[in-house]
Length: 268
Image (cartoon, rainbow, N blue to C red):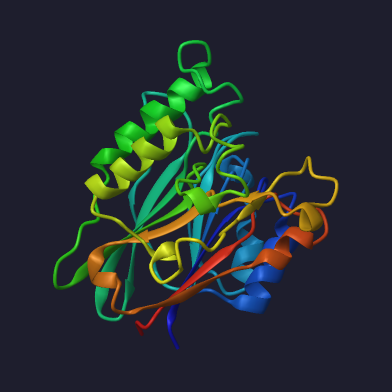
């Protein structure tokens, strides 16, 4: 069986625990990384995860806002819970997990959304987002003969032209502005990360992981964006066996506006 890893902005883990349980029961990834858990650590639903076989749980929560969690069937070693930009937000968690005889450093990120106005001079949320991405330049894809790195999460930027429903119409919309996409790609390249979701996908193919709640019929309009990402160190490209965007989850009862992405690696 391959090593499988899922990432999902759940938009409140307690509110949407039935959806998480469905994902784990139906797809059973080895590791699940959640973002925007909106849950302080003492109220995290540990028992529900353990009841489904996910005994190993690392969390970095925050009441009502943000928050990340990584749950696993395999043992986890917490490496870091890092606060970025000197702000007391819970947006990053890194752990180590073993697969295929190697140690994998796994980063789980929830990048700030940035508000509505793409001007850092008048919108502090956008300034925070740009500063956060700049600080991520220091997060490198560490690798050697016995170790690898993976970075996943809601990175809140759709970097490429076909990562949004309309490149032209979204150039002035937060998540796809040139200042964001250029700094994002520069950061990814600086860390020597490989964008696995675009690895074997034609550039012209549309890829979305998020559909707005504002759409009256999200499926008919299909105005999506690829805000959720799976990256790895170069030495995980050979065993990378593909991924699935679980689009149908956007139509589940009381859904998140993001859907899970499940990546597979040919690692025992």
